[in-house]
Image (cartoon, rainbow, N blue to C red; front, top):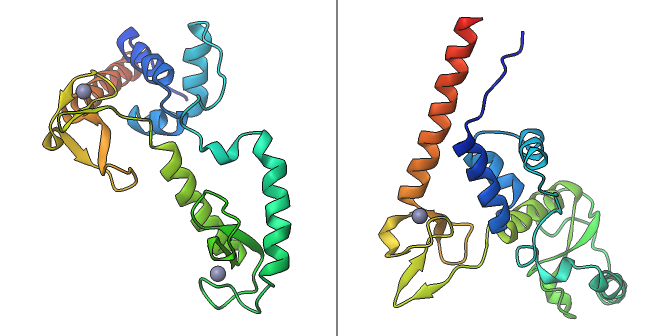
Length: 197
Ligand SMILES: [Zn+2]
Ligand SMILES: [Zn+2]
């Protein structure tokens, strides 16, 4: 038996707001303890077209016109940095592909390494996460803007986030708390619903 979760308007609006702020679906999923399908449904319900990652979040190197340049660069690197016998990271497995280190695709053999499949996947995931979790943030007089409530706050009003350049989460602590409350309210409704069935 599956339990029908009834999301409150507040919860739905929070998701939509975050989505329109350009926060990646993957992070919304985590913050709201929900999953992609649900988010898409809510967006559809509110007539918001899902357009994938919004501008400014994806790394510029991953944009369409750069793809051809990247392929050309890859073959240049391949010619200048021959495949070694072993993966440069673990020195255990056979190398599988050339991986870019900085994410900037420099024409520099030191910006590339030969990695085995698993090391490549590991590093790729980390890089992607790093790029996706970095919506641009305004800083004014040493105060950081919370992407959610738009207030400028000092560092200690934010949780630490190592994956971000500035080292702190894009939502302030107060906004994270509100989010958790939203989640638990929903959870309570969900349980209540289950009992009344
Ligand atoms: Zn490896
Ligand atoms: Zn906030």
